[in-house]
Image (tube, rainbow over all chains, first blue to last red; front, side, top):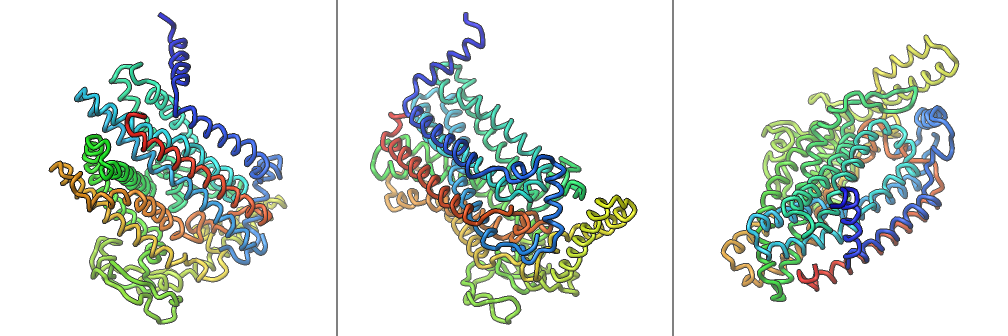
Length: 75
Length: 510
């Protein structure tokens, strides 16, 4: 009798091997995740406060400046 | 922050709306179909009838396609928080951290673990454990939704928190108050029950298609029978929770209620508009009738909003300009208090920087007197606090009309299903096919009511959308808007193609 981790490993291995439609779906998922994390997140969606400031104190100061200066129109 | 770039705000809004609405094409089907799979499999385990197993595997395959295409589309919303909505994101970080972390853990352990057993485990684990896994996927998916909707509920009704002026953040004071907020609970129960209806309509659509084509007739009839029972229960529950949502709106978001009911001037014993065409030229305080034509239920709105036939329901006009008789403070007065809050917050910031502790304490105490009106201080005019009334009104009424249709079709399918004559009702089956597309429209309309109806707020009364945005180049936001539009459309086309292919194969292909 194989150990529990080995049985779990085999369960997943055999499951992935026996997939038919699942293989197509995994391809869609992997392409999607690549586009999201390697393209969109990296080049188009940097975290604004993290990239502009190095400490939380600076970020808090910046946001405080943003919310205390009078707004002309906030819609 | 000076003058706000409205083009930037509106493109940021449009981008968030686009991603949220596309994401929401996939989610309701996941939430509802997971439970339907659990019901079908329970019948299989109870009866031992292999036909129920084949039926379960068929719907589970369609569930898997939808899950795979839709998974992670919500992550883009989190990218947008950090990039486009950095002020907002910073300010709510402490509140949203706990619910979203729990959502991640629950989603990972329940869905990811049992999802594999659900798909790989047929004939490899015991029937009982497989059924348990299917139920865990259904419960896990819906619990994930709970935490997201708790976060959304907090934005609509921010409680259990305190504003920390040193960190410019809303900080959680009472987790349970946030979790069990009546708005969050109503939002969760209404969203999930209406999602169950979407999945029921999906089963109706596919099964009706099979019956029209005279293919897989027995499987289709069985699927319909179970789905129609689930659909009727979900319909009743969605109605009750929708009523509770309206009751909450009357209490904590009266402007939203007034907008989606097209109520410009409040009254005691307010009527509920059952059907009406709004006057497109109507503006606030112009004396024109807001409706060109209307059929109303006498005193229905007072009953819905306040549980009393003669209760006063404020209209848009009362909320914007105030109504002394009804003790309603207008937005003009709230703007004054909001601006005072901003002035005191500025004074607190300056005193703190200068190291003047005594002055900082005084400013902070003064700020706290008006902090509940902080968001109003950013509005230029009282009228800026009014959401798009016509959009809210039509979205709400479309949702309600379609919900009634879903109730009727569930009833018809149940009755003919029990009589075993559903396959002969050829006139009814096209409505079954159509029902899923209508359910998607109703589901999206529901979110339009919830989100457009609460504009201009990112956080109700505390932070308007314009102040929540990051200072980005509008061209960048436009570019990413179109990128998303293309990416999500491709994903949707992929889903439709794979799904249709699988439906054509039928249960043998599962």
